Image (cartoon, rainbow, N blue to C red):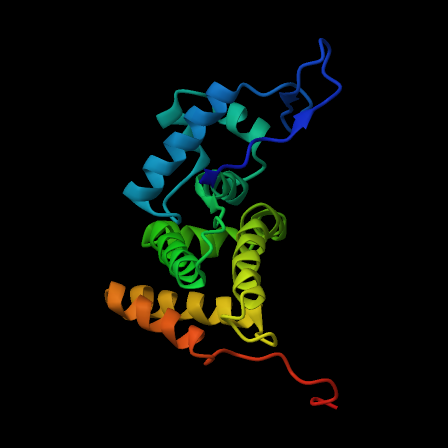
Length: 217
């Protein structure tokens, strides 16, 4: 099941309703915000990040530049918001079978990389140069994704299907790096049989291990 992040709200809004608050302090209009973000998404695909401007986004959305700047301080903040909005954070259910869960985890990594492909990928690298955007992406996207992935791997450890000293984060990083390099750098397809082979390799015990106490001293 995929979940999407929602705008932060002002719990002190009169009437008891939580309403998103714009940078200037006034409540946001979710419909207008969505229109601006949708316009930015269209232009990213058409033009790429470098050619994208706030003026072009405003024109496409049918609003003024002031309206956009009232909500996002600059282009990187706007595109960062778009990427965060569109990024899926998928829970990996307890299926009672480690291989099935690891296969689902690997498939999610492939999906996450695929969603960031091409011009959207370059946009991601551009926007994460903004510390505020990077922090939000880590907190709202990468953090929850990693939490769900860790939980799935730890279930495999609890069942005895994966080593107790497995370095969970390094395994996930290795899988993510493999998918990114093969699909983005080499521009080659990752076959289902190859994904299965990576999972089987982990289940055979060929995984990175946590260092033994004192091993690095």
